[in-house]
Length: 365
Picture 1 (cartoon, rainbow, N blue to C red):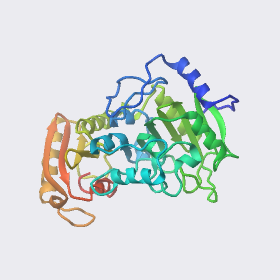
Picture 2: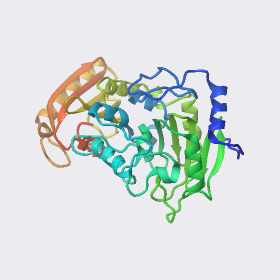
Picture 3: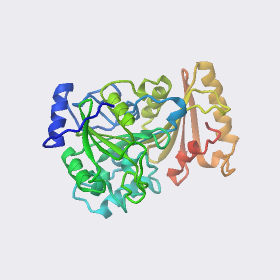
Picture 4: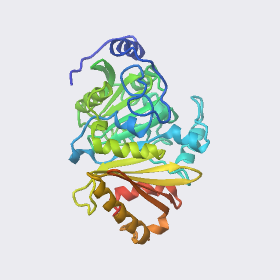
């Protein structure tokens, strides 16, 4: 990464200059489902917060380094549930109530990245350390295996607030402001360095951090210089995870079903099922729905996979608990769309159990 120390009056000033250099496109606050390739905000990244758009914010990764891609669309879910997003002056209790409504009971949303880590919201909010509030995150995404996890968020952010808080917060004596291909980045600690005695709201073990501020609607987060450089390149329109045809196909299928949160991955080598990539998501339509999507290499493989899935969810049992799938995934509907397989079902409460199906490598994957 070509980084150099910079002296400037404010992050917002550099941001404005970068915008003029990169794009004359119309800027906008992220919506709730703009397709990839849609309207471009100033700075180069795609507008919207759909799963496809969030995928495009992350750079390509080797399959053995990707892990699980996690996406959560907080504001889209709030709109679907009829919940008001708290304003900037909201109290801590109001913010916690908002997040609790989205994640507990029928809520079904889960943590997607360190940029909105539910475990830290009550004890150490990002507002104090880094100048942005949880309710400002409209959607976030992450991928990669620790410690090389890369994250991005869409929302409505104030770069000056973020810069001021970071320069006066936990990492105040370590932070420097650098430029990465025209994007202002707040950088603290060296690559792979941690300080257990000085945790932050972005890392309970005090890991190094890189916080990129390409525009008012986007945050980029990495733990090393190479990771931030790759995030910036993807934001600028370079190669991204959206260029992976199988992941993109799965993301598109999940978007078509209105998924509010999702996890995507390539097929693990020990799977008994034949597919290239798969995803599981949570949608809302007068109740919670689980959506499964698979990209295969052919229509015939898709039909075979659909038949196997139908047998599994109607007569099989989970590996983790031994409970019949028919008790957990209710009224399943499975269909093929060319080489894609899409399965939907209502879900037994608590709705937030769905990510465990992929994390535990259940026989759905």
